[in-house]
Image (tube, rainbow, N blue to C red; front, side):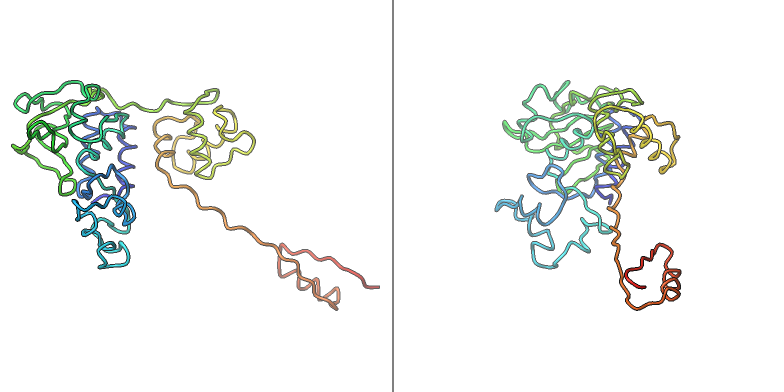
Length: 304
């Protein structure tokens, strides 16, 4: 099972590659296979605290399947949803499809599968399962009576859904009754951030500057001022050198990928200086002591 961080890194890479949105969303969905089902969850980290916030009497497994909340252990260590000590995300069916689409600039309106289906602006086209197009990513639905009771993804005859956790099926089950193409899925490449260079201004410049600061690259004079000047260019070149990129001071897709996924640098350990006074030393003894500490200095007080 992947970790949440690994899925986030994949999303950044897919944006960089510029592949069709159907493929990008589908690969993101598959990367989440194994992540847990929690009713009402929309992609938050699977932690005891987040599970407790989602707990409800008609969904007791939210608590009972958590080894901390059910009292079996006092930490997440060893839990299948804490692989190698790394966090994963949790979803319900409508939260899963919404989260995956949202990574590429699409946001399904509506709190449930039925309201999502009924919101016309969510969809480019939709229909019954007998007319499903298999060459483009769709959201699948299960209709019972007047309501949509379940949703997931369909692509090229396969499905990916969050029911008993996120699952991938190589053959579409007969339960699905309807399909809908998300409005942003049109075969185009994912929307990528613009290439930035010295002289550019605006919100993307500010975002890059804020990322540089978080990663420990100094902008001492101007800070995150939305203006790509010499100071920002120097910081970008330093980052590119540190991460093995072409050092040109231009923020292209590879540099954006580093800015979006690199871990912030830890705060430096503060240095404490001490003053030590030793009375009644001869000058020779004092010089001998100072010689053992290269950064030490010696001052004399009093004397004849």
